[in-house]
Image (cartoon, rainbow, N blue to C red; front, side):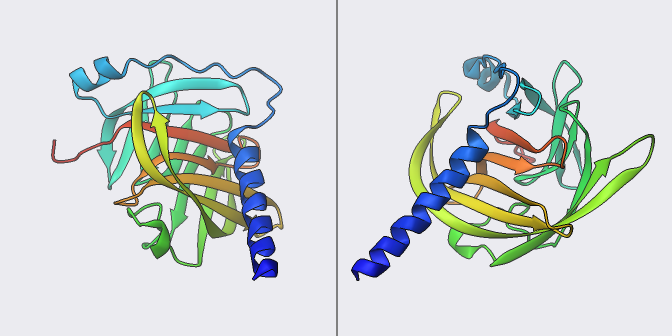
Length: 216
C-alpha cells in the first residue's frame, strides 16, 4: 500500500508540474490581461470569452458573432478571436500564427460535452496551421489524458465547480505538448482550457465568461 501511495503521489506531482508549466509559462514579454465587466456582459446577454496568448503576451475579449456548422466564432474589437467547436479551439485569428482548423473524430470529448471519467483513452487530432501565402502545414497529434483535481475555480468573477483534465500529446514528427482543461463537474462542458494551436503560436488559453446558447 505504501508503495502504491508513493507511486500515486509521484503521478499527481508530475500532473501538477505539467499543469503549472502550461498555465504559468515564462513568456519573453509581459502578459496584458484586459479587465472584463461581467455585469455588462450579462446585462447585454452576450456569449463571450477571455482569450490569452502567452507567446506574444496578448489578451483580448471575444464576443460570439456567428455560428457555423456547430462552431462558434468569437471576435474582438481588434479583429482577433477564436473559433470553438464545443470546447475545442478549432481556429484562431490575430494571436500569432493563425490556426486554420482542427479536424478530429466525431466523439472527441472536447467537441462534445463529456464528463472526465467518460473520455476515451486516446484522441487523434490534425492541426492545419497557416504557412506562407495560402499554404498551410498539417500536423497530426495523438493525445492521452489524466484526471486531476476537483475544485472551485473563479472565472471572471463567477465560481465554477470543475474537474481538471491534463492531456499529454505527441505529434507525428515526435514533438510533445500538453493541454489543460477545466470541465464542469456535472456536464463536462469546458469553462477554461489551454490548448496547443501550432508550433509557433503554441498554447492559447480561453476562459468562457458566458456560454453560448443556441436556443437563447
